[in-house]
Length: 109
View 1 (cartoon, one colour):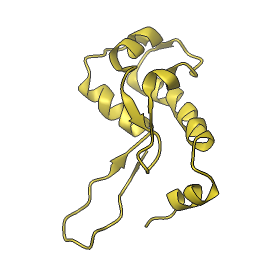
View 2: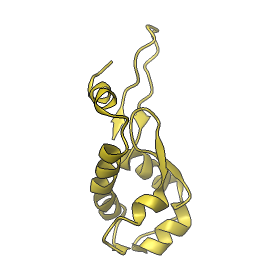
View 3: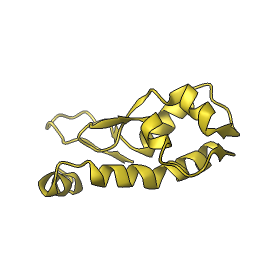
View 4: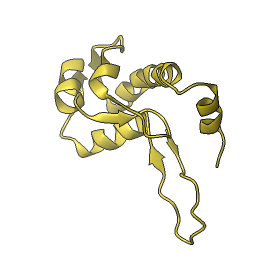
């Protein structure tokens, strides 16, 4: 996932904030990990990486998320991302700062 940060009323286009599987995908593209890969391969390559799971920059180690994935082998990067997505969504819901923060994350400003 990615969301544009709030505007500071300048003329520069803001960068998007990557979190969840979008942040994982960016790190996968920079890594030497090749597919097919096992859960252990992914964990060894990126398990220590802190991945933002919401627009507020809260993060979690990818290894923690991998522990919750039922699959142990991934034939492609996309298959890994698909397996991680529901786990990140659940983690985000369970670790958000309450109703106010949830509502704030839904608003575009």
